[in-house]
Structure formats: C-alpha cells, structure tokens
Image (tube, rainbow, N blue to C red; front, side, top):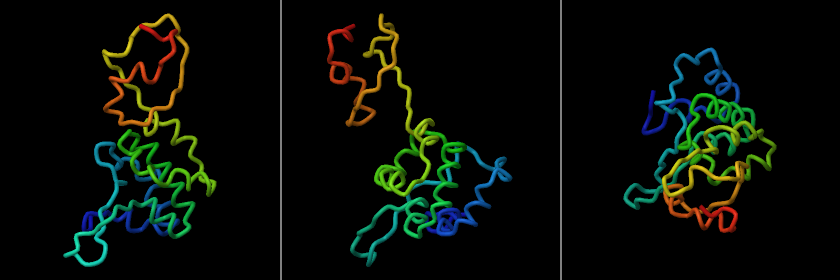
Length: 159
C-alpha cells in the first residue's frame, strides 16, 4: 500500500516493534527482489510553489527517532531480500552514522549491496597474479571500465 510515493513500511519506520513485525520472516513469501520496499522518497520542503524538496528513506526516519532496532531490522531485510547494488544509494550519507551508533553493518558490507562484481573487456580477464586486491575508486561505477590503469598503476598489473 503506497501513500504519496511512500509505503507503509517507510511510514511506520519510527517504531521498532512495527518494523520487527512487518519485516519478520513470517512474511518472506511476499518479499520479492523485483519490488523493493525501501527506497528514497521525495518530500516537498515548504510551499509547493517553491519547488524545493529533499529525499528521505525509512532508515533516515528510524535514525531520527533513535530506533536502532528498527534500523537493524531494515538493514537485515535489505541484505536478505533486497540484495542489490541499487540499495547502496540508501546508505550514501548515513553509513558513518550507522557505524558510530553501533549498528551492525558487517552483513550489509559483505552483501551484493556493497560488493559488485563487474567484468569488462577493457580489464584483463587472465592475469599471472591470481591474488585478490581491494583498491579505492571514487568515481562512478559506470566510468570504471576505462580506469584500469588508474586503479592499478603498478607495473606488475600491466596486461
């Protein structure tokens, strides 16, 4: 059920007991990856004529109301049932706050939300070094295909 671009789960995110019940595994047959229930909602700010707005999601609402248990339930739902890179945009501004408040994010960081495997022809498919390397990359995921030399500038990573 949706209300003005929001859904009931986002509206009730201020209450831990509601979130715990609504997101329990009892209803897992209704959770479909194709239809995410957590997303950013556009909210009008002030007068509609001003055209000013901002985006908020259920995690933001729960954090504003100090509902850490609700946040934990939402995060568990996201990495279990909504396990997609697209969900990472929900955490762009709040990930440091979650860690600071002691919310468990290890499962989230190890899920497909934050770990995205890509395969591009511009990157070498076979290499003599079969080790795994983690490197920072701060540009768009869509631009990474042309940045192999930027991410791995060392000579041992030459093609």
